[in-house]
Image 1 (spheres, helix red, strand yellow):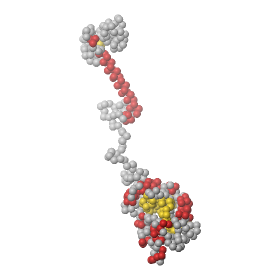
Image 2 (cartoon, helix red, strand yellow):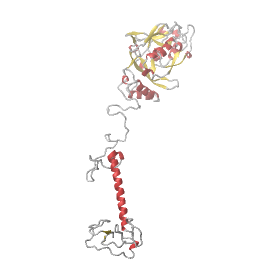
Image 3 (cartoon, helix red, strand yellow):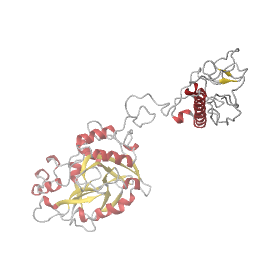
Image 4 (spheres, helix red, strand yellow):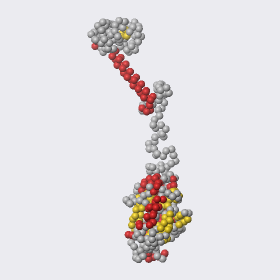
Length: 435
């Protein structure tokens, strides 16, 4: 029995066409004038030049389909295959349209698909046209060489920086205090003096040998508008309260103010209880700009915290620790503790006070810069000359004279580190600090 709607052959007794679902009425009869395709067996209407199922040519002389053979009912209707193929083609077409829409809306590169770019009218370029290269996220970057980007931008001449957040600059004055803090922290963590020097040299803070001579100054504008300068005097020389190293130590190149060492003519209780220390840690600290003061690091300073004695000798145990963010240097931090730098001895007519030399020598160690400059006792040295308001001045050290109760050590206006004065005198104040 043939369907009067689509011409598909159906088994006798079927109620609905197996191809189009149309009712097979009792009046349905073998379809007249139906042409059967010789390739797939599908029925076609008269006049069709090609099979509507498989597309093969239909012979002009093909006669209406003969009655089905007894075993034809055992074959699956060929029309089913055609319908399935049509459905699949339709689904693929829909999917392609969806991808094309997404490609036009977002660009093929955003989908991560290997498609060509859309043309100006929104359609994809033809298959026979060489697809244009799709820009990727790496477009414009240098060809990979297996190494990571050093983060230095386009400046090919800039040296690589071993410390995050601290670019390599030309010299001390070119760094911010925050950058110097990063460098100082890395030097402190480097594990040794030599490693610290090597790191400082990479940042142009010293030469390869560790020399600080001629490495320049950093400008500092105080809160009262005064312009001053500091020099780097030590690398990994000071110690923090927890026993760690302070990476960088600085000293001002000018006196920031005038002040007394004590409120009386006595040096009792030494640096720890001195009027000078109270002034430095409070009033003088207020003169420092916040970007510098915020980076200063508390360090342990060794000082004669007893004072002097008019009768008898004193042991080196009178040298004890204080913890200070700002301080003035001791005698030994400038001149060192070699025999040539001793302050008391027969050659000076003070042989009876040689016991004072170990006390003064215990107040720290000579800073790198002053060792490299060859500072010695009882000699003027231009590198120790400090000015205030344009005139050179004497300036205080934190060292109390061990054999006099009314005397403290200072540097004179010519840069000689071996002089002294009564504590109630007003001399220049030259602070140092670590970061």
